[in-house]
Image (tube, rainbow, N blue to C red; front, side, top):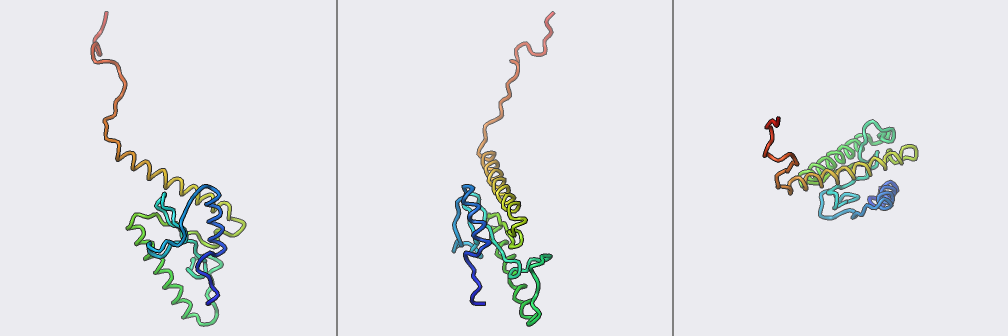
Length: 158
């Protein structure tokens, strides 16, 4: 297991290259955030975790199959990973961060483009939603509606 990388994995690099090519700028493995997210987009208050299906126990995925030997060890290990992931995402959410998880199986060649475009779409909507809320809160002037002057309004002229 010492050969298993935790940073710069192929799926993570795929997501990073796509985001960079679309103009998104990010930080990697931010040390001050819980869980050291793979990609941190500060402008969007969003973190992206790129998870391997086996190591993080992607339920319903064909790539998540427990080994035939030491079943109890692997079940406990993956269950701990799932709990840790959920706890880290809960902490990030309480800090005001949006959490996105991209699974390894979603980056396979058949569905890669669809997944990456959905990620871009989600990021833009998060950004627009945050901007809309901020601009709405900042706007305190009353709404002025153009209408006819009050003088003579409702009076009949014959």
